[in-house]
Amino acid sequence: MERGDSNMTEESYKAREDVVMADLGGGETALLDQATMRYFTLNETGRVIWDHLKEGASITKIVEALVAAFEVTPEEAGQSAREFLEDLLSEGLIHKA
Image (tube, rainbow, N blue to C red):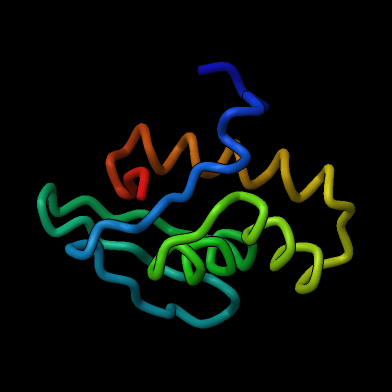
């Protein structure tokens, strides 16, 4: 899949239930993949996205949340969201809902 694939826009994604989140303070969040025992850290943008993925969300919904939370354009938010979702998918932390 190429970055920016338009088919990704309307798909929904959901976090795996066995990935545990912990707030580290200072705007950082840690994720623990209990299946592999690997840790991942998220910045504030990643945390906003992850919060939406816990219940399942489309990129459109995630972009709206990023635009509301940060001073970014929908285009910037969309690019960041797609790249981050692709990373999460490749690590197996989320799945298509």
